[in-house]
Amino acid sequence: MKISTKILICLFALATLANPSFSQSQKKKKDKNAVPRGWQHDDLKKDKFFGVSDQKAYEELLKDKKSTPVIVAVIDGGTDIKHKDLKNVLWVNPKEIADNGKDDDNNGYIDDINGWNYIGGKDGMVDEDTYEATRIYAKFRNKFENMDPAKVSDKDRNEYELYQKAKEFHLKKVDENKKVLEYYVGLKDSIKKAFAAIRKNLGTETPSVEQLGKYKPQGGLEKQALQFLKTLTKQGLPDTYIYDQIDAGAAGVTHTLEFSLNPDFNPRTIVGDNYDDINQRYYGNNKVGGPSAVHGTHVAGIIAAERGNGFGMDGIADNAKIMVLRVVPDGDERDKDIANAIRYATDNGAKIINMSFGKDFSPGKFKVDEAVKYAVSKDVLLVHAAGNDSKNNDKDDNFPCDVYDNSTDTANTWIEVGASSGKKNKTLPASFSNYGKTNVDLFAPGTQIYSTVPDNKFQNLQGTSMAAPVVAGVAALLWSYFPELSASQVKQILISTCTPMKKKVIVPGTEKEKVKMKDLCQSGGVINAYNAVKKAMEITAKK
Image (cartoon, rainbow, N blue to C red; front, side, top):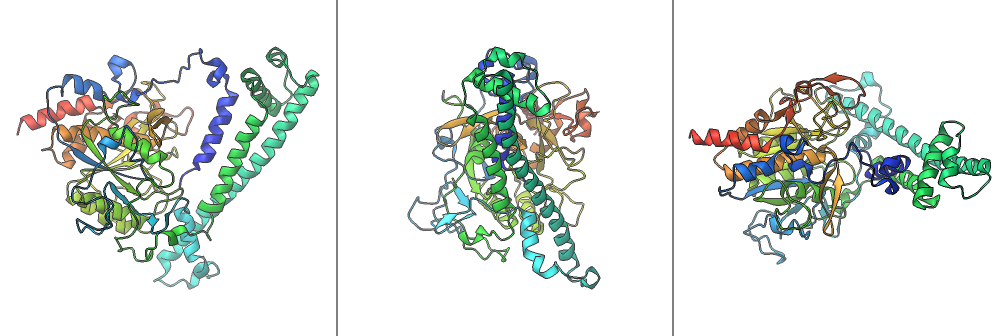
């Protein structure tokens, strides 16, 4: 389950408004937490930032070597295939004729030129969807709501226990969001009153920055409001600026309650499939952009935005082709769609699959596992984001995952990725990143990552969603120059050549708890393309 993007944007806006070091009037003041644009490419020794050293690898190790294209499937919420920095690196189905309304290659998908959209239909596409816990609650509430636990049959026991777990989770989230909504409503009124009190006490409706600087606030709320008022005054902004931010936050929470947490909301009819038939494969449409392609476009750019074209930014891989598979709505992705996207990617030549999504429940995990096993059997590398809840994935669920259902067996070509911050100090792991000594393999740059977004634009975003494509990009770089390697070899090279972090770091989600990076992931460090290329050169030279 993911926090609404709208809520995050609002909270960030409030935080930056309250902190003068981020305000427009303080541009000349150096932010000690800032990192340079494109820092994910940096080399720690040369550039002082904990990047992946891919530029160093190109310049020193790969300069005179030839590469072969590697197809990377981006399973996400959609990608802008017209973006100037992406249009030349898209996978194009060689056996399909564009827009002729026929399935030329007989793969079951009509006009799948650049990939497929599994959450689109004949007359539209899914934008909002519910969370998985909400869907489980909605599916079984009539059956189990008033049932005596002692009368649940052995046949229904697993479903009943899943329902109870999902119900608890769902109702907790509903309650949390309602409280946040109440907070926003009350905050706006409180800030208005605090602004009025400050102005009244100063005896003017238009106090100067100097007057505000001398004012002694009464209480915590007035102290916060004073900081807001100072920044508004410095920047010449009206009070409505802060009110609009609060309203945006409230609107985001309302949106979550109306759609993601609404058990009566079901957009699946748009797709037109038989949703209960989990084995069904051929549905959807070829509109891979979707209604909101920010996330998927950003991910694609990190992997393979055209290098050296003088526009925007450079991806990590210089010879990757992006296959676009849309399965992620504003809400939780569905297992049926994930499984089908993995199979499509595998059947159509993808060597790497990037999955920057995750959720807390997976009722169709067995079907996803079947697809993962199929991909593994075809020598495909699967790269997955560990999640952004500051959780320990060794203890908490984050689906999909490499551990097969009802088994201790794992997918041996799966890489689970945490997010790092770029600084070689105690805050190297991003504060939001999930982690796991066993279930997270390595960390990669995931904060303030500048990449492509729709309409030929670029933006900084952060999350393990950004860290995973960094790893996918390094894997594509490696495989394009050393195609003789197997997926399991690529995985082992990437993990074994990470730049280690030997000093103790702060555990994500805590303020002071420190451990070694080895306690947060298997590699104990951050992926390093230069080291990986050196290792690959050694291995292939022996063959």
